[in-house]
Amino acid sequence: MASIFITRNVPALIKQSLVDEGHTLSEWTEKRDLTADELIRHAQRCDALFSVGANQINKSFLNACKHLRVIALCSVGYDQANVTEATKLGIPIGNTPGVLSKATADVAFLLMQNVARKAIHKHKEILRGNWGFFDPMADLGIELQGKTLGIFGLGRIGYEMAKSCRGAFDMRVIYHNRGRNEMAETELDAGSVSFEELLQQSDVLSVHANLNKETRGLFNRDAFSKMKASAIFINTSRGSLHNESDLRQALESGTIWGAGLDVTAPEPMAPDNPLLLLPNVAVLPHIGSATIETRMKMMQLTVENLIAGLAGKRLPYCVNP
Ligand code: DGY
View 1 (cartoon, protein in one colour):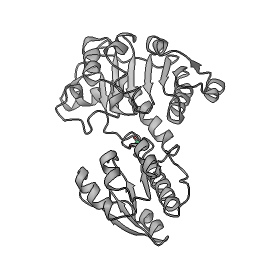
View 2 (cartoon, helix red, strand yellow; view 1 turned 90 degrees about the vertical axis):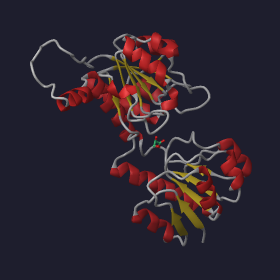
View 3 (cartoon, helix red, strand yellow; view 1 turned 135 degrees about the vertical axis):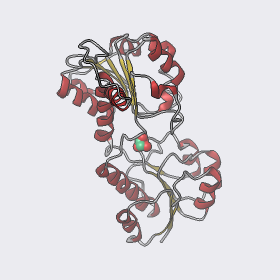
View 4 (cartoon, protein in one colour; view 1 turned 180 degrees about the vertical axis):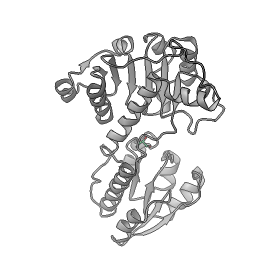
């Protein structure tokens, strides 16, 4: 029997599957993130951590909680965790791959269509009382049929986005990735290109990569300047992959046509952020995985990781090398 600290209030069904294994649970019920000190204080009293949200599993946390037998992140991304340090300390870290790919790609697709047809902007215009005179050439959108979709990071989520875009709009798919994705090349006729070519050729450039040293801030002034003036930039991965002030400048100056973001840095985005007022921008509050079905599956994988780790077994979804 072990004790587990859960950093959010999770459904009873999920908790029951841990209780059924004989574990005891404590959970954070306040409607705010834990501070770093609070996270340490609670985790120090337990054997395992069920981490929901962007809790920083950094060096100071890990050194203060060396005794943890498993840390199960309820997310596929693990940039919030110092995996190298955890591995040195012998702490396994788990994540939730696969189960959120379709839901997250659906949000990229939703943002792409929103920006192409200015849907969020038009909704805001109605609220402002601006649904009036019909001008056939005013403030038009662009069509996606047959356009080129560029995927930066063609893993599971990027693949789902590419598949949807092929199916719905017969888009040509190009991608830039660390390695080749043979399945996408065979099934979606996707072409591997250099980063420069991705920037230059994409009508829609959708980011599906992990945040790391190489990708942080990659979409900056220089990158936007190489994109088409008619291009749409979509980011559903992590906000730190793009430089927000460079993006804003590119959008205001017409360097690119529009942007759809499900992720920002920091999160939450401040309500007075000027990006929110631009007509060619759609922003969502990091809802890529936010469907009932997907969140339940993510929590179930988190439970599987906890049960395995507490039994001294290799985690089924482990990010340590
Ligand atoms: C993930 O799983 O990494 C999503 O971004 C939700 O945090």
